[in-house]
Length: 66
Image: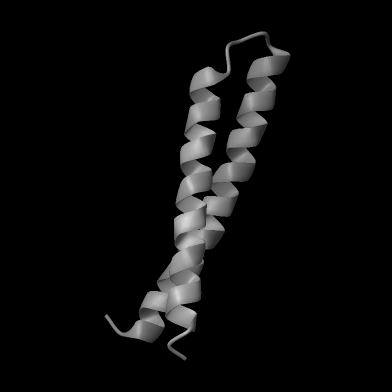
């Protein structure tokens, strides 16, 4: 895979991770509203946020090559 296509893929991963985070926050609010526990959903949100951070680091690293 070329560096350019790797960069494009990393950018797509950032967009997807951002969408997962938005949706997960909605799920957490729905759970709270309905009186359900949110711990598992909040832990998953943390995983999504960590993953987003990693994808953004990849974009920066790959962008530096151009």
